[in-house]
Image (tube, rainbow, N blue to C red):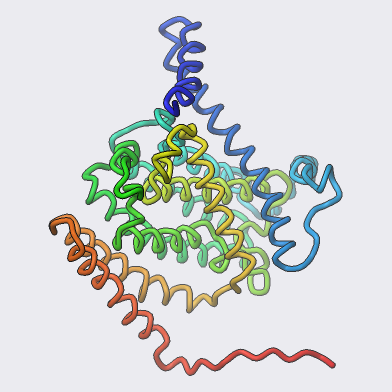
Length: 391
């Protein structure tokens, strides 16, 4: 039944494409996919902003947006209109061309990365054999956009923010990719569709998702931590360190250009969360066999909302790290753990199924985790935090 629901959208696209001459059909098909991708995730961006602001308000015991529309639901519309009507101020000494192109260079690659993420059965805008490689290749362009924004503004705070952002993004991009390598090793393919298909089926009522293995669980945790740093999410939001560098690399941006940076960060968050769902959470597959009748795209977006809720919860809970803590965590913990997890995945592949395989792989992951975690806190002399209130 799920396949029949999924086939509705696929058949509708084929019918629309069939109305055009054969020489136009490839272009029309691509335009439909692009329009569906942009409209869906742009709408999800608007919905996420209001949910995040309302959620953070509840976490911090205050009201969120509650003035525009019923319960503040139209706040994203008001914010969008405000961004489009505000004056676009460009510094006199800025490189106007690069200053203009920087937000576009950020937004376009993250939408391209979304194109290879299958949001449902037969619902990948771009289904290629090297999809994971394509995802990380186009995602690397975000570092270029950050540098363009910081350098073109001719502002020392903007340039310092860009350099700090690039150092953070490159440092965490390495464990992000290495944590995905484990899945590629097990499946033997770079195709996101093949990776999801490899996780279909159930074993003793549990789905065959990679997160339910020792190496998959460790890889998922490493991937999500690195994804938070790549997306500039708290507690890794140092590029926007207001107390030191006054909003970071986009300090000299205003109006719709600033809104594009804001959009790019959220779309990048959706893209990396979608890849995490594809790699570790079974993609469009249901968690229980009895729920396979639910349309596959609904399962994908339910999982996506779950990960977004996790990011919002973390943002409202954890304080921002210092730059030395952030870099030490990347190079002294994340990178070694990602390499060790590759070893665990290799051993899992060659051992026979059974409890011994679980125990061996779990020990390979847990042992270094405890050792590396203890090493990070050596000679730190941490004391219990106490709170004092004015009388």
